[in-house]
Image (cartoon, rainbow, N blue to C red; front, side, top):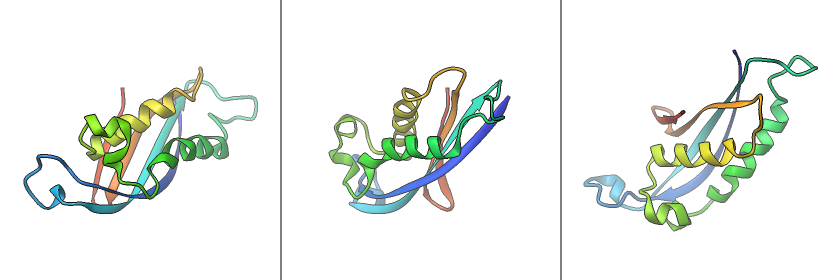
Length: 121
């Protein structure tokens, strides 16, 4: 299995509902997002997929998060905007943009350099 990864990011605010601690208050992060794509075969150029194409697809998906209050996005009105749910949400949006033989292996979302959450199937 071959794998490639791209990294992007966004700046956004959120607060965690029903959390007992500092994160219950409105605060922001400079989020980092990693997208890992896998394939058992390479294309005619010897690539899983072009890095630029993957970066552009990821940018499309995460653009709705940039400089917003995540809690105001429709999905996050029903789901607490934790890093875990953000990774899950981005994973599913990005997965829908890929076609065989490409497989979205995982999405990792970093709130800061020492804290991240990963979603994969």
